[in-house]
Length: 269
Ligand code: MLT
Ligand code: MN
Ligand code: ZN
Image (cartoon, rainbow, N blue to C red; front, side):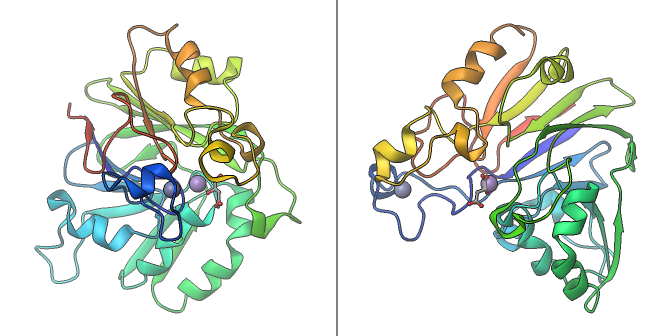
């Protein structure tokens, strides 16, 4: 299995266009918005989410280059873990696809009704429930980790709003967990990551009060559905055989050694 981080930032990217916080101003922040590419055979690729930067992310990733057919792409489908705009706006930028396969839960599917109706006029859109097997030799497990709805979908019901995904290579047994929106480390989540080789965790905020301290804006990490890294590191330490790293990094969050960069390869076998 191969796993490439196409983008490592939370919504807004880093730097964020209207933010003058210390991290945005220091000039080193350079992150596009959270999207990951996975493949079991190095030929067929799936995107985990489709953020607003998807076009430039695909263009700078040689494994995702089109061909040899004139409109052939290695991108076989998109797996959505939330309906948030920073995970889904890129779907509209994939409208040139001859055919687009999108996999999502019932709640995410319902919330994205306007996007589905627009996209259906541009491409042969196949919208399905999350599969358990992916082309290229991967198995997929999904766990609902949160019920936080996007702000634009606040009046909708549903339960399976925020998912973690576990991908397992059927040939080598290697496994990768994607959980960049994780409100809490539950017993179910602990079992879900047990024995995984690599985990990409929620790196939105380093601490509970980061956003307010850095920008003066209201909102704790937990109130926004994001377990801070200071808490998840304690849980991760109970799994010494698993490598934990952080993605979906907010622009206020100064990088540490366990935070991934755009273009990072997390797993190569
Ligand atoms: C989140 O990760 O909590 C959302 O993307 C927030 C947002 O869209 O503002
Ligand atoms: Mn987000
Ligand atoms: Zn900032």
